Amino acid sequence: MSSRSNHQSKQWRVWVANASFKPMKSSSFIQGWRRKFKYIFPLLILISFVTVLLVDSFTPAIAQLPRQEIRGVWMTSNDFDTLKNRVKVQDAMSQLRRLNFNTIYPVVWNSGYVMYPSAFAQRAGIQPFVYRGADGHDILADLINQAHRKGLLAIPWFEFGFMAPPTSELALNYPDWFTQKRDGSQTSISAAGEVMWLNPFHPKVQQFITNLVLEIVTQYDVDGIQFDDHMSLPHEFGYDRYTVALYSQETKKTPPTDAKDPAWVKWRADKITAFMLKLNQAVKQRKPQAIFSLSPNYYDFAYKFQLQDWLTWIQQNIVDELIVQVYRPNLQSFVTNISRPEIQAAQQIIPTGIGIMAGLRNSPVSMQQIKSQVRAVQERGLGVTFFYYESLWNDAPESLNERQAAFETLFPSPALRARAE
Image (cartoon, rainbow, N blue to C red; front, top):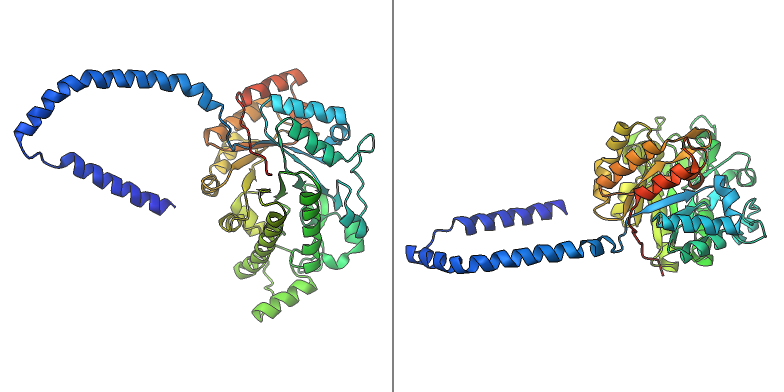
């Protein structure tokens, strides 16, 4: 696209140069034009003045036009006290709408369990532990309904991706579904603690994930589905019996001992890409307008260390919106990461935003830091999504009133998003 644009720009410059410096045929032509211009000039001034007045008068209306700018918030298992209560959910959606948010991302897959009543999970013997509200209602259905009433998009978040704790029923009941490192160990340490990794190359794992995703898309009035940095595999993994046999069959080689070997990294990354393409196609077949959302780490890290080739996903039209997680307290580091070329490239194609940390229970974030990061994001024409809902207001250095007043200044005008039908 850039080369075509450069070519057009070059053509334009050549045309301007030719038009500007082409010699006049006679001096009489110039004198005649000068006489005409003396009478036309006042009219041109009047037209310019009226045009300025009209543009100024229409500016407020233009600012209110719907835009596909992402202004979202993740709703996590830490938000369960709010999510289980219909009245609190209604108040939360009203408040987000008043503050000109436009999207919520409620968690539906966490710690190896679903967060809604799932027929597929029950048949697999994986009983959901959090999916009923205070009065026995379906939390996800209520949340989506309340969000839509306030004009917010609801895009369920498949938080854990291929990740699951070793104590989960999924890990205990289906050990063959999990992969391992070269030394035979099966766990790694993540922000969620010690976890195991489902084998993204195994057909049964792929079918299980697909079943859950399609269940959400078809059983609920969702606007899309979101995956994050856990829809991947740490580069140390992939040395399980199934994957080794598959790699040997396709390449006539054994997997390299070096987990960072470029060819070995690419082979595994390409397999994950192929699965995501099939998953996208399955979702679009059920609901063509569903937003296929992705929230990864910055690309260099995602590809090299998590085998998540999300730039290729975008090029293959797998991703409909991108939210890059940039949880950096230092403003300079934050700005460096949101200015990466892959983010600039993505925002030319699809709605693109930045994930900003609003705080954790044991690590509050000041409103000053949030405001400075949002300002930097907006200056680059990017959207924003906060992690996570409760930390917008609670467990913060400032009072509840101070936080809410500050958030009112972040998005002074609405930015509506079209719903998927």
